Length: 135
Ligand SMILES: [Zn+2]
Image (cartoon, rainbow, N blue to C red):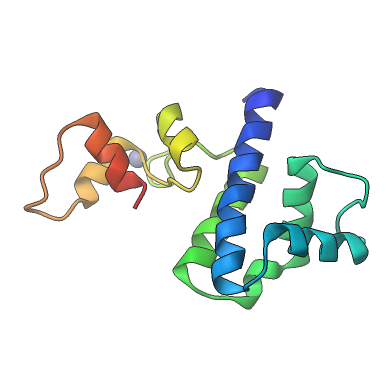
């Protein structure tokens, strides 16, 4: 993954994080980042989304809340750090790039997802599988 794409992905993850923080911490990403900068967990001069993600991960913020949303976002950030985002966590096949663009938290490729879709909910078209992946 090139630097530009990686940066955009980091920005998307920060967007997801912003929604998560507002829902579960009643704080915006900006407030959290300001706090982490004061505590020197993030370089006070930086606006680099990658450095911000690293700082947030090192702060242990997600370990305070244990729910699916926290797990999903924490795992996505870990995959991002390990350059594994865009790889299915089940079979390690690549996940279509437009899925990741739509939702960076997507964890499974289309063939694994199809196997997980409950019976009776037949989904054949690529876009529909993609919608399912974003749930
Ligand atoms: Zn898979």
